[in-house]
Length: 479
Image (cartoon, rainbow, N blue to C red; front, side, top):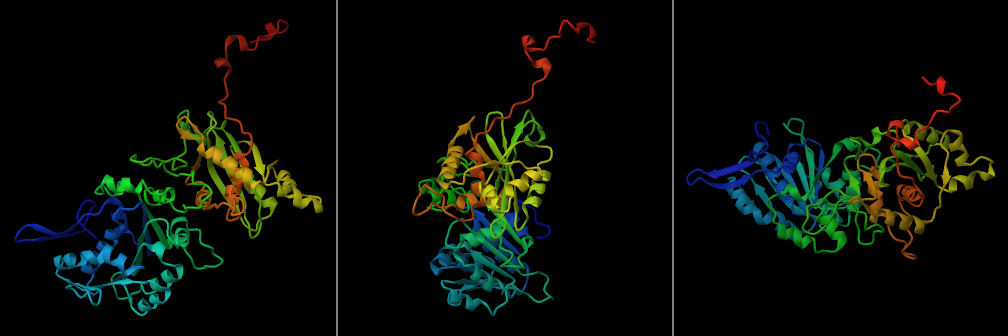
């Protein structure tokens, strides 16, 4: 894309005799990011109506036009979706670029020998139809409708010979939700793939571009008003682009973004920047009260620690998390001490199991922590109480901000897993078992009494009557 600047058309074909534009595509900033990326596997996702399908098709057109003999594949899971998203537009677009679309073959042919295949993959066997070919680019439209096995098998056909001036890529677009959202979220969004199962997974080979409503200024407000009238979990998936939100989630009140109808979404329970106190970053104030919460585990469950700062108005910011697997209590405690350097630690709330299990051998996990510099306060592992306490913090508003907020950069696992919590089918008030270690640790904090931070006072700021007076016996010694 040498010589093309953001704001310029990526594709611009005009009828010279009439001066009429036959095909003109000017990418928005997130679409430019998509076109410019050289990451082998790239996903663009988020809010509905942000031009993801158009972006992928125009990317395919551009690559086909600039690389003679280029082959690409665009896939939807079902043919009606393929028809509505792509094929409907192909006759006009291919005529504009001096090519043609063969409806029988479902192929687009370009004047320079390039071609594109438009296919669908309704069942696992259909994936076999795309395994023997070689494509310079493969596009999965609505990736959450494809299984991981489909993705792996088909994307294996993204390959080219060494003499080509380009490398093969895989591109995808999707909205959150859908049957196979979990693996898409793990591989592209969270990059939390189980490395024991997928030992060759490299997070650097996967990229995610998140779109929001403002990324498509051409989409009318009426469209988003209709989305705002849908069920809460669909509204959060399609209007806010949230991942991991389901109809039966335990914490539907956990909202990374506000979702008031007709209003531009604002950060709510998840923040991208830490608050400032007295004009400085939260963590630059040594007098800020910091609490820790520990959920113990070794294998297969991990050990987890959260760091939570409590502001002077008693709002809490979960700003850091750490996770350990197959690590001894002594080593975890030493790491926690190192990670807490410079902080004013008030208390550390912990899993009651840490006191129970070690009694048979005379030394408990809690003892090991204390010996290594992390004194603990025993919490209560009650999934009903934990759930209700977190609900209370999520739904309390102080100074027009939620009482509990989570720092995006510092706490990816907590943000990822909190929306995944489910209600126990036998007892809906109780949090069901699952990947819950970060949520349970948060619950230990939310169930506890915490004290708001208080800026230290100087003697000069005290009222005169509270200032210490010299004793008559030593007043002459005062200098």
